[in-house]
Length: 400
Length: 184
Image 1: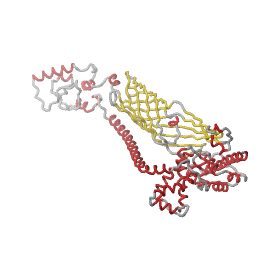
Image 2: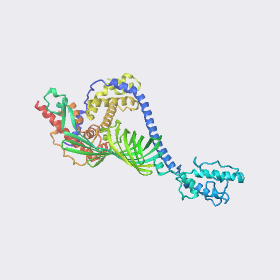
Image 3: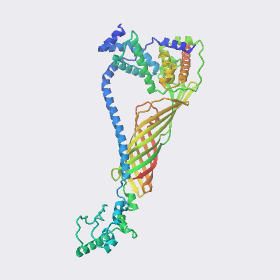
Image 4: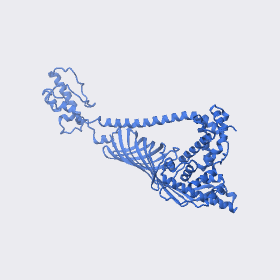
């Protein structure tokens, strides 16, 4: 029989067929119609909230990145010797021979003069002397001697870190430069991290397909024992198997120090999920491979637990929202079209260890656990099949 | 029994009882369509409920084209909703790698008509999701293979292969059923 004729016969056999539901559905239909208007309003509010949340997350990233970029080009606390304006004033050829800057010890000894009129840098409290005066008094023998004594006393209080061979012009700036030890222990306000992470372990599942025993007679399956009619029947001619690889993640985060031990971080993380599905039906076997690509925005709090010179130990916890960037499915080598997953929310906690092998650059390892909430979609992936995943995150961290 | 036109007019006039009458008139047909797509009766009832909500909230947009057009419109809505349900809740696998199957022998003519409609409906529901969808779209919705390929996101050749395999699997089920009936 040809395909068309068979199709017509099949359609004809079911053309006037009707079946009744197990119970009256009208009451439920009426209730749902009455609730539909209120549900539509609520759905609009939820959609708006999600959009604003996405906008806020992007804004945090942009502002955080702008802040980090701005701080990177306008650092405070730099050694004064690197400030060109201070150097220009001290070494200016236009400074009269009789009026060199008062902070220069040799010149103070040789030439007792009033303070220089042009001072552009802000000295620290140790270095601060009398404020610059617009109207200088004419030098007299009495006040010149007093000033000399004052200057000599202040010079004796300069820190021992001043190198002996430092030039006079550099002496003031060298005293402001922090030591290597103080620089390592000072909490840096902003840190940039490049990370890579992998879940530990993969997950496999093989499901037999079940059918209710009470329907055995509809399929000519001999099932004589009525007491077992409620037991499920395994359809031996049909099997399903699925396998999910552990997620792989890479990302870039920026963290900002809130208090001495607490910091907040956010950034962007790319996740890659691979799954394979096999079905065997009678004499047919099909193999499907699924690839899911997510882009996530994490928000974490880090608490410093302990540190010793170059070694840091901390704990971290936070949430992450992942957006399914792309979904692809290939069945026996043929590309199929599938819809994207919904937003995926997760929470995680970890303990990390960081070692700074350079003053501002460190390597860190962060083992932890992450739990993925069921987002209600029908995309089958490792997040749904195995919602709690141990992971190991490693990366580089730059202190800025 | 009132005509479709009279029922439609009552619905558009806001007659609350007309909604109940509309439901009682088409629920049987709606269930039979849903059960062809969705294996679970409970899920099929959900599909039917959802379909009736959609029909009654959009009845004002329906254009009457003669007796039978309301039934056809309602059937199409149920079929569409059942299709969406299967797409959302089941994974469909298709293949283009296996060759097309040869035509079936003549004795199959007797097989289809000897199987009761309710049993035949359940057999169709037990097919793998991909086969089931192609079969329903081709046989009952009169889609061409190119239209099926477009709707399911598969190749046209794959649609034809799926239909052939569905037919083969259905024939096996029907033969087993008839043998069982003959032995009892």
